[in-house]
Image (cartoon, rainbow, N blue to C red; front, top):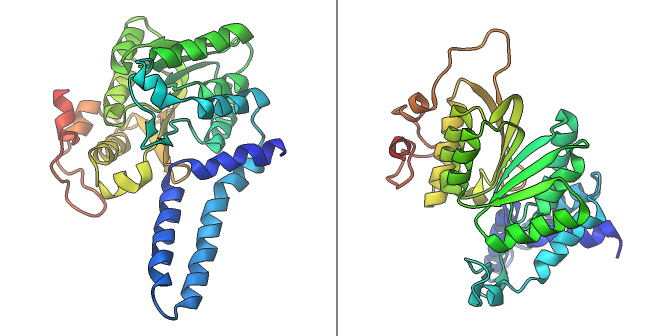
Length: 318
């Protein structure tokens, strides 16, 4: 099997907004199978589902391919017996849910997208909040200019060791720091670190805290960019239907109302938000994160905010 077809096939097994849509279409088809007639509707839905399932593999196959080295990292991830590792105490969490592999790696197309941004912006100092087993980490490292460095953060010691050992073996500018992301970020702030690109893909209900630390301490370079993953979170942020979904929607509203930055949310993968500092000549008056959080009217697009442990108003006490 050629490289593109072998690798893009894994897109079908990922979670994300497109897969949620495909699943809902499949459920509708099952219901229609029990109904007499409706053949035209069934055929239309089957065509729609086929289109939805093929979009991401197609876009990956028509983009600049990832290297064999990066592709093999995904193969290694899929070969891991996380259930056994969890039972032996090697990992904190069981990443094999009900016997089914739970993959937290970025979409292949998403890594291609990150590589495109890095090459375009010439980012050489990159921070990744949530590195997992290095699929996106090494993908980003391949795109940065010579002498660049990707610094990752992860809470799993085994993941940190896996990535760091591989980086040392190959002489790649990658290091993953073990620890709680909030604690490590605060230490980075104290050290005066600054990054050209920050990739945020960690605990969803902590996104607003990562953002506050980054902006308060100038961890983002003036012309840098923050890339936030999972801002749609399978549609739960859109509907505010889970605690994590509500937290992400609160975070996205927080960013959208912060006058210091400009942002755009892209409806690709599982939702991606891009954030950059305002760099125009006539900038609006700075609006602090605290004032953005304190806005009394941050509502969802469908309904008034429901009570949750992670509303925007609650962020001020964290």
